[in-house]
Length: 286
Image: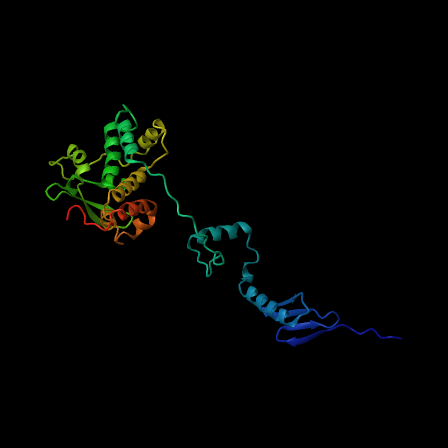
């Protein structure tokens, strides 16, 4: 008569046991005063040792005194700490950056810009005084500045003797000066208030509604405040202004690199036009 062999746990390592009948490995160790016994669900010793280490690490992160903690109480604790939570590794570390295609944003022509200003000026009511909105938009396109710079501009920032405007770029936290361009003089002269140096040049902070309505009336793309700065830069490049000078007018400190990268589609046309000057003859002014 054959005697059935009795199955038994065999200790094969620290906290690691193997069940003799099926070869499955088990963990047995103490955590917070409590004995933990757990099947590691593998017959491979290397995998079992790795699973044992993970199990021990997991148990070290559990507070046994919080066994009666309700889900609602746990959520309250989490809500109180989530704003200060710091994770050791980024969950997006494995993601690769997808290179985006360089986008050419819609930019109005100078003729479209003048039409927008004119139609705003012709309106009797547009949320602000029509003249105020029209002057604000006209300044953006003729000065090449943004709405934040225009809204913050004060009478004392305009130096009529030196013919300069001092402004502050909030994005870069730096101040810079631009010339009073010939195309800008008439507008600034209309708004000149020598007896009120602290008065704002423009009473409004933006003309978003006026621009949107003007574009709708003229059946133009929905241009925004920044569209007119792009128009200014594009027009300056096309008229042959040195890119480094344009960069200084924009408060950039990179010598024109950003403008060259952003307006490369304009620079190609300008480059072609400049190439036509490279003849074997002398220039007309020599």
